[in-house]
Structures are given as C-alpha cells and as structure tokens.
Image 1: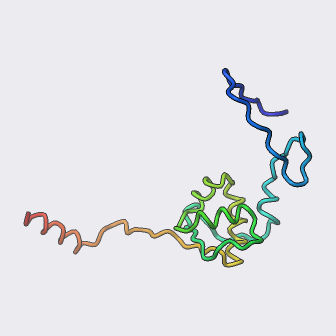
Image 2: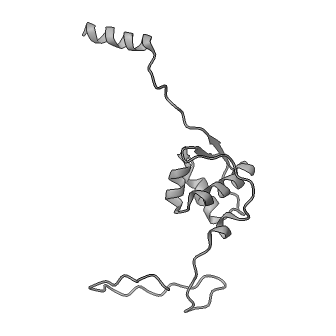
Image 3: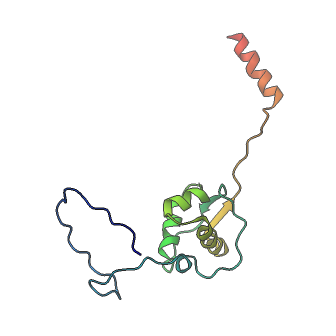
Length: 135
C-alpha cells in the first residue's frame, strides 16, 4: 500500500525531470535506502546517550559515506546525539551504530555534557548578596 499523495489545488509550473542516478534507469521509481544500509553491520555499540556531545576531530576522508561526511561537517562545534539525529533525519539506533564506527576510526570524539551543580557554592551566594547590599 502506498502512502497518500498530497495534491496541490493550484499547480504551479512543472519542474524539469531530474536526471537519474548512476545505475538507475529513467522512469524507474527509486526505493528509499533501508537503515541497515546506512548503518552497516550491527555489531557492538558505544555507550551513547541522547545528550552525549559529539565533536569532529578530523576532516571527512574521501571514502566516507554521505551520512558520515554530513555528520563531520555538522560537528565542527559540539552537538548532542539527539540534535545530530534530528538534523540528519536518522533514528537514534542508526546514529549510535554510525557514531560507533566513526569513534573507532577516530573521526569524532564523544564526551559527556557538562553538568552544573544542583546547589550553588555558599561563598559565591554570600558574595553576590553582599555585592547587592552595597548597591
């Protein structure tokens, strides 16, 4: 069963037909790639949470998959696994497999997020209070 197609009420200009990809015949419908093709074989996974921060530590190699190249370009500054999953439109399980491969190849580094203390230091609070009283 195919998903319902959205119809426009007032069609605008016709788009030119896209050229077929290499190995694809013209007029042939393309099937979406399955997630296991993107993630590769499912082996051991790194301990990653949704809030684990990922930072690129190398440039994308020429042999990198398109998802890996996009991930390395996004990670010039630290991003969480949840953000990367949303930006690349990939589920968390696929991201963990992809990131595990990249961590093994030392293309990215992973670190836990910086957790702030639940209770502020008493001396800092007293210093702020005294400073406000002087105003």
